[in-house]
Length: 198
Image (cartoon, rainbow, N blue to C red; front, side, top):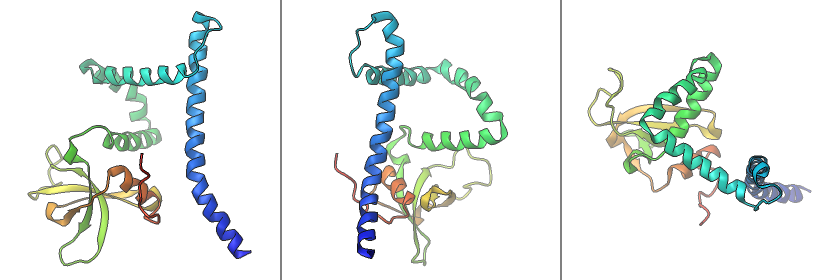
């Protein structure tokens, strides 16, 4: 009986990530198709090409990206964000999610780096993500020492994390993408760390 339960949980662990990914994709495709039908059917009648919703969704996301890239858009965006940045509880959630999303936005290549943080004379190593290569623009008192970097240390299961400011010499680059590091931190490095080949 114990062996059967072990096989069951192994099968469940293998099945759940695939099932959840497929489920989320189905929800997204269904929603975009339904929205596209509601928008296009009044104009085209019964004529509708399957997949038009996905194409329309992708086009809207690209258009939003172009719009946000315009100089005037930053002012408009700040007005839209006003309620989210002023309400007490909503502000904390929105700011955290926005900062997290901004980290994965396109930056200079060397700004995103996975490192092993090791203090001199200490064998302990902690996986972290370099979030700032320069302390320029930060308030006085943060990163006052020369050649410091900001390293975010994610906690297991994404309960939280810490940002530490350390000398660059304390960091050892790790051959791992930011996405892989965050995924491995989410499951406390319990998996093999092999990334599925595209």
